[in-house]
Amino acid sequence: MIKVGITGNIGSGKSLICSIFDRLSVSVFYADNEARKLYSNANIKKTIKSHFGEELFDEHDNLVTSLLAEKIFTNNEDLSFVNRIIHPAVRERYTQWLEMKNKDFYTLYEAAILFETGYNKDFQKIIFVSAPEALRFKRLIARDKSEPELIRKRMQNQWPESQKIHLADFVIVNDGKTHLIPQVIDIHKKITAMSAQ
Image 1: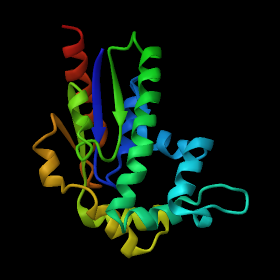
Image 2 (image 1 turned 30 degrees about the horizontal axis):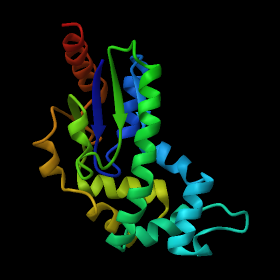
Image 3 (image 1 turned 45 degrees about the vertical axis):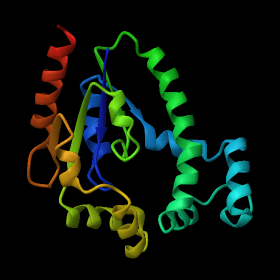
Image 4 (image 1 turned 135 degrees about the horizontal axis):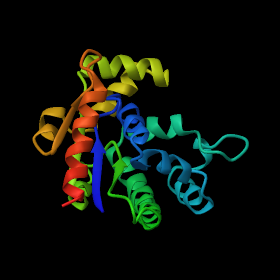
């Protein structure tokens, strides 16, 4: 099996691209979604409380992720602390998921910060989803309903596109003008051909 990482800066449209691969019967592991699920894990909640206190939790003891985002995207030490908790747990789930997909020609691992964590080295191929910064910002405003300043800080915590494009094996342009399906099919054909060798 060929393990393929798919990444792109926040708001680039990774999930949309992954949904097209899914229609081609490619299995996709959504690392960022798995990370969000982990915030309901009792041990992880306890660790977060020990660091941040009770203020990030609602009356039902659920983590308010928007409050956590405000903390970690304005403080690099807090961001590193949360990453040290979440990333190993996500990778453990990914390993278990891979065992169930061992007959697949190739699989996708979708994550926003693949290069920043150095985890890109664990994949044979990397797909990068590119979108103009102004368009990504507009998408995030519409999607997350967050404060513009917080969105800018989240964007600044990621490497610039120019740095990532040079490290990727394939680039998908999601600028609202370029057709996506032909780009995905072209990459799918190339990876499938590699896995058949």
